Image 1 (cartoon, rainbow, N blue to C red):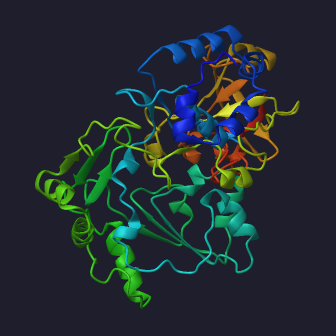
Image 2 (image 1 turned 135 degrees about the vertical axis):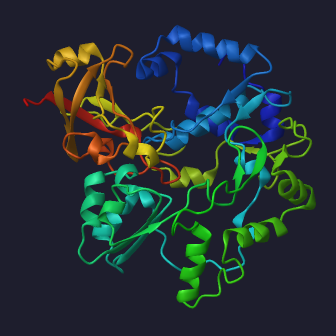
Image 3 (image 1 turned 60 degrees about the horizontal axis):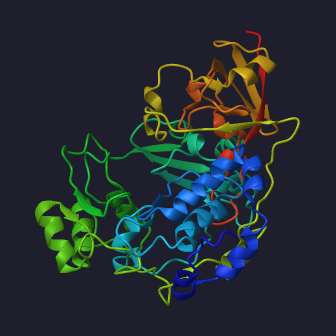
Length: 434
């Protein structure tokens, strides 16, 4: 509406710009600002700054997609540099994870055909264990994961894992909450004891991970355990890759020479192409025609409300508070949750705490229709009003009643991609007399 869109770029390099414009039209500064709780003038100033400045780059991280509108949120963010014409100059455009820049598809080194088996979305683990009957899940092998701490609808997951007729194997480095519920626990190596090839998130580095110590006791890497399972099941897969080192050499054999040799010789390859690609000058989207798809019809069909359409906040008068579960310096994931020695605190803005007669140190009951969490309260003026926070990655020992934030997260899925809606938990908090 302010004639700030780069229509020449949109015409030459995109599909679906008019459909995007149609869906964007209802989102005035006033409507967006009211919904986000921001000053509309602040949004307008940002739009003008972004339109005027070059180079301008948007860094889109992970987390914004973990709600009912998450896929559309990411689509909208990544559409901005296209509409504003921020490509074509060094330092412009957008950045997300660069790990895909190497284009190392598993198809290039996995020779075994994909088996014709059912695929279960892990965010529906509790539902799958309790409700999938055609056929039922009778055996669960857990690796690289601690589902009791990380899956939505924690109480449902716990109920599923408690089934007497479910045989559960957990392949782990530490005795997690999930491992405590296993029939068999197998010791897994850490990254300090095994080989791997690591792709960078932010940079364009490819690095060889090498063990710095021997495997401790009976701990084994994923490759060896899966290779032995394949052998015992009479499968051909992995017969020539029975060890970590053999799997690494197999992977290296399919890499181009310019990547394989420096990776094996020095342990690192820096950059792809010339290492300093400029978007829409020497690198283009991996679409059939190299153009941006601003309105992919397949995603329009997949998304329940359609692309760039907002599904309303699930808050109700019974559960008015938004629960978020950010990472902390001690729990960027659940692996190190065993090292937490204190009970976690629920962070609340003083105004929300006052409305519920809560002081720092009081024990609170945070609850919704899915469950409840008992923990102490910390009044924190840095929290946004209407939002409460409990760290992600907690083990059950980190609260008074053995439930964590995921007990209050539904196993509904995001609008695109089948992700978890961790940020859609809506709760109430009340004081517990202890």
